[in-house]
Amino acid sequence: MVNFLVTVVLAILIFGGATAIIAKVLGVDQQAKQNFYKLDKELREFAQSDKDLSGFLMILDEESYVAKFTKDTNLNLLVLVRRTPIGTSVSPVPVEPIDESQKRVYQYPSQCAGKDCLVLCKKLAMIDDTWTVRCDEALILPVSEKFIIEPFLVIRTQKIDYRKIFDYNQKVISTEGDNVIEITGAATSRRVPVNLVRKEKRDDGRNYISISGSSIQ
Image (cartoon, rainbow, N blue to C red):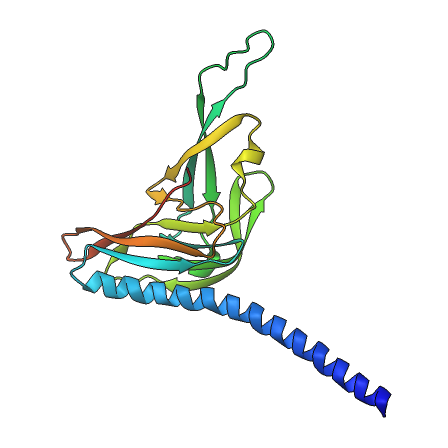
């Protein structure tokens, strides 16, 4: 009887612990998912309001991003890196910094089916060393035709570490290209504050909205 009771108690503890872990993992995933739906709602309401600026707290899990893609178009970013070569024994004085750029491509998800879309990429991956990023698991929402959203990318990843890719002592001073801003390249926090900004009103009456935040510095 004692052995039986011990076995039952251990089974309950193990099952309870496993259930708690699963619930925690699913809870984290659901937070990012619900936050993505909330962003879509906030964008729709902001587009119909008279506001020019509104804040939003975006939630991202590790190795994920939120982005807006234009129909059948990749997000092409130009990563500008300032290299500062270190002096040698012959010339101990460091030479002038060198600015170099590297193009990175975020592939247009096939799940968008040839339309403008908002994407929550729940699992991203680098394609070899080509500086191309694909999305292996995505949640897609169509963009309303009642307003226009400028392409953007908010990313949280450790896969892209510029300081490991380049050999020099360098600093990434900006990341932008094709009207796309990479708001964060390696956010340590799941919560990333961004701004919804009304840029202009088009001749057809539709508001042109952008999402802005702090670029990598």
